[in-house]
Image (cartoon, rainbow, N blue to C red; front, side):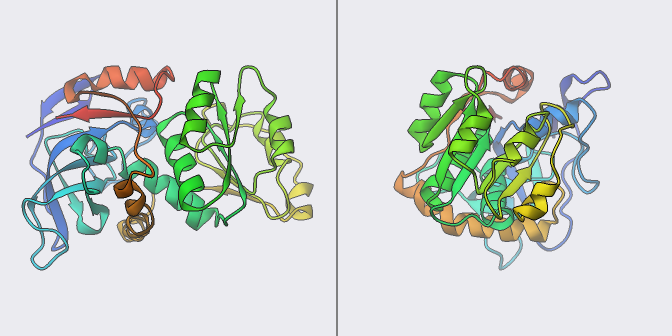
Length: 319
């Protein structure tokens, strides 16, 4: 089969690779129709985010397609349409994945829509509900509201968990976009003072893939028992934090990743996501936002768009 492999110079090449091997009695083989781009794919190309050893070396953390093989007596059968969360390998014609990491397509969804769900909505659900323990009526902050993860976080925080939502964005246009999704307050990173915005809207839960020098000042705005969840450090790995605030306010600063969790853990996360969010997708209350659909072989252009921060919502690759 073919897969989009990372070359020594970091470029991508549509290459011949071995067929996927089913790793036991509970794996599903998927004929991939679409995959989606995540920032982890860019990090993997840069050589700083290797896939877990049991997964393929080519990128791709989510896909949608048709089941070619399924466990006897399992949840899925040959011919079913599914989307799946992967540890890697989605940029390919076929992929093998544990059955628990597959989900049915929401009713009425295309493969392109469905492939935009597993990674960002599972990440949002994990960190809002399980790690952040968000409660109805609390205030939630997302740093980077216009990206794929930001969209998922805004939608779930507002429509699934009943939170007030504050989002930092890169432009006034992106702020209007985030408000259309459910954000109550937006802060333009180039025009507004984020610390003042958070002082006026103290977040009980924050999801932050940005980090950097401003992170410590933002954490200081949190109320008693606030939970600040760090996913990445796009603005740099260093900040200054008054650690006295941690015990004075009983704050939690938490590092969290989805990719490093076991397949069993991921299966539990996805089961909760389907239970709580699929009815919202099927009713039209929320929907994934897709910035562009491009051919799989043109993934480098999708990566460029993400690297430049030009996208609102997800970038999808069509096989």
